[in-house]
Amino acid sequence: MGHRLSKIYTRTGDDGSTGLADGSRVAKDSARIAALGELDELNSAVGLLLAEELPQEVRELLTGVQHDLFDLGGEMAIPGSTLLDARSVGELERAIDRHNAELGPLKEFILPGGTRAAALAHLARSVCRRAERRLVALAAVEAVGETGRQYLNRLSDLLFVLGRGLNRAAGRGDVLWQKRRERG
Image 1 (cartoon, rainbow, N blue to C red):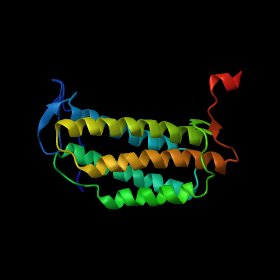
Image 2 (cartoon, rainbow, N blue to C red):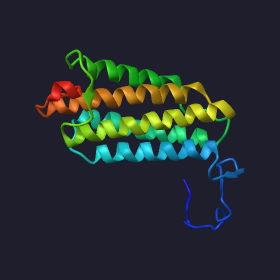
Image 3 (tube, helix red, strand yellow):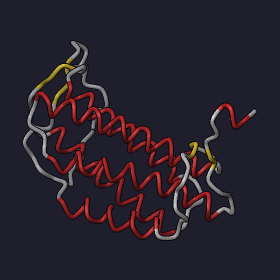
Image 4 (cartoon, rainbow, N blue to C red):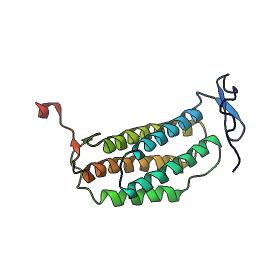
């Protein structure tokens, strides 16, 4: 692969537009660029979680997620392209099932917290939900493949389960929500 970014600034976006990978230009506040930005933020949140001490299997899983998110971002940058396929959704579903099988049944709502790693998993989950909403909004005005929306929906579930699992692995339980009247 050649040098992709030999010059970091180009000044071409000073007018409020940005270039897509297909050579077209769109407004920086377009629905497509908003979705791309949310995916970038999500990938950064996953990267922040990866900066923590994690079980090797979780580390490998999340590293794969980062690559998938880059593929999905590629789909946003090249309208009409398909870089993420249904296998990726299936991989997330199997990971959810595998990690959830180790956890007790959830009978209460939980708060995002516990260990730092678990809290970061929940932060990534909430960013993922926002990215999913942006992708749905984009799909309302432009053609977008279903796989990306499915992937983000499953990824948020996986991040929720991983948050619970990371607390469990650290010897902590879930942080249970208590109604105001139950807290005293």
